Length: 289
Image 1 (tube, rainbow, N blue to C red):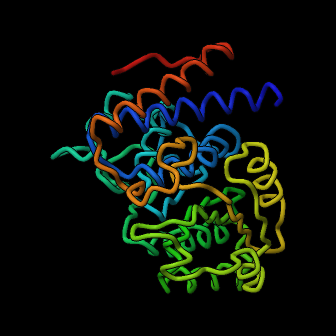
Image 2 (spheres, rainbow, N blue to C red; image 1 turned 135 degrees about the vertical axis):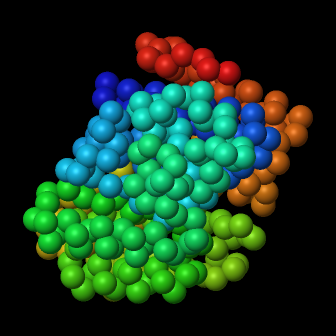
């Protein structure tokens, strides 16, 4: 792994630490779907997105639409690490009057570009943003993150058809294929079949990559933004609760309530991540809780 990817890996470890510490503090929250997009957010926010934490609403910027809004803890932690707000604010998640509600709200949280959470609707928001960028002849992008369970919603396919028909390369679509949703596996609830073939059939330039590989994600995004002939879709082969093996294959990994056993496992994995960061030169972040 090259030096650049080691730095990205350290960021991804720190991002997982912040997510887990926040959820442990709150005693519940959307863990599984947050952890499965850590590598994606790491690459996007450190290599591709033209953003300014001091000017979160600057007009000439890239946009991120987290259509799977329940992964808000991952986005919030990313924004905090990138300097949009103080990390102490992470410990207000879901409190009354918080600026970090369970699902992202663009009117409350600096750096959030779209209010999402009602699954499927983020796809239409991102499509509209992408079309507006085209009308403005902008070279910026909208990065749209959807969950695999979210594809049960018909609205997603209407938006995808519009993206493909109009060859909206301004939008890069990511499918977090972690193969589990709230009530079980996607295969059991509503089999998605071969997602790569489905998006190719729709007319997307489609890539399928290991969603835990920073390098594969990086290369796929580079190919996507350089392709101006089609809308792009990147299917991420992920694991729900990625990076935290204790929760693999557990049916409660969507939004677990913390207990003594989970606390212990969380502390162990945080210690493992911290050790990796220290052994690779440390990072700029200090403990907050």
